[in-house]
Figure 1 (tube, one colour):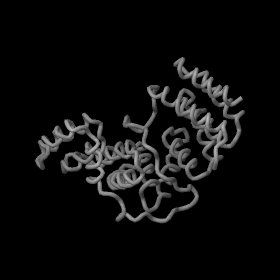
Figure 2 (figure 1 turned 30 degrees about the horizontal axis):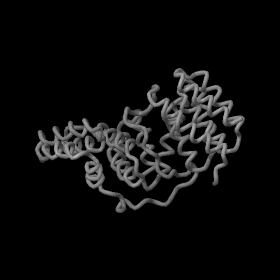
Figure 3 (figure 1 turned 120 degrees about the vertical axis):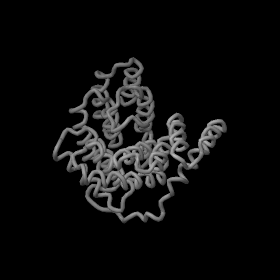
Figure 4 (figure 1 turned 90 degrees about the vertical axis):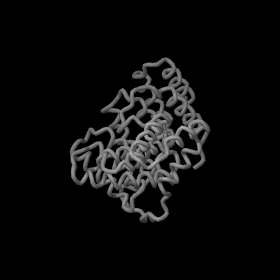
Length: 276
């Protein structure tokens, strides 16, 4: 769908404002980078065709590609720690942590057989999943996350953080993405205010074209967590995409009252002015 001038301005402004708000408190499953784009969503009301697991890229291949993007000196540091013994793997894991390579850390944790639980391995791979930027890589890392968290969640069904992480990866990389949606619905049924579950359901609704449902999710998030301005930005974008500049402006005006930084307030004012 071709964007009109107003929508283009709003998109640009929201991207700019998101950057400004980067250091505001974020309420997420972990402290890993949140820039990773989510994969093509599945409808909350219909199952998609199963993904062939044979087509998933191998984790060691993805890791090798990420190493290739390091500087020559950084690659040399990693090569100095190459080895199959526990001490060498532990040293390599520290180096991956130094370079903020979540996949490298998770990969080393898995190689240290028996030292980490299914939950620890699953959440480590989930951080790598969140950090990944490429759809094909996210599918592979998500499948690895599922392999550990599925077993753990069956044993510990009340661990909401792990359940939401599992649901996120189910939607992206499992043969039955509705398993993920059902997990999130189960969380909401027990706790209708759960921030992570509401956010994931809202994001999946957007990507599956269920805009009214997505609007409802983000309105709930704003009502429950008004200080998290990013939800107002999401909602304003949805209204803008619908061509409803007035609603987008009202949403941004409400968000401006909660903004702390002057740069954030100025950016919101700029977007609102372009909507008029």
